[in-house]
Length: 214
Image (cartoon, rainbow, N blue to C red; front, side, top):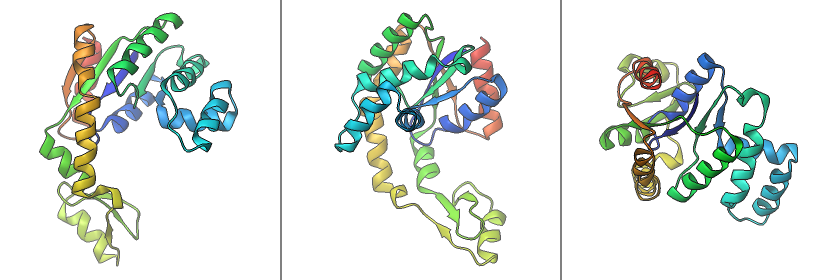
């Protein structure tokens, strides 16, 4: 099972990838995690990434692809992988396709997690962390009982600085401009499946499993 998870910030990609990873025993390959691991391990491409990052520049696609190739060559990826956070652009998707074909591990499916824009905004702008328990809550979707439990314990519902409506609106605009074209790319390859990513985590997960078994 070799899949790419697509979806806007707040669509639940990371949550669903972790569930799928645990059940299918395949790794979730996150770009950020890979970069950190490759730099820490001092791999060939990790060293290249470190020199770029130390200079304050963005890591170029060819280095990221090199790190992906190193990661997918590890034994735990033999049965498959879940790519999360890459590709983000059509060019990256084409480069990734070429790399995976060279490795003999072509992609099976690209799963688009589809969520209404208004719900995405509420999921992201409504996120709060209880200052006492550390529990993640949402002022729109958590029950009043859960919210009260935090404040009754003397806690505050803390919002991250980057969870303001303006910041999140910008992130969603960037997603639409750069990443949404991937939908057409994978559709043209006959590899796109779309699932509704609204509802409970378990409901979405069952839809994900069904889409992958078709």
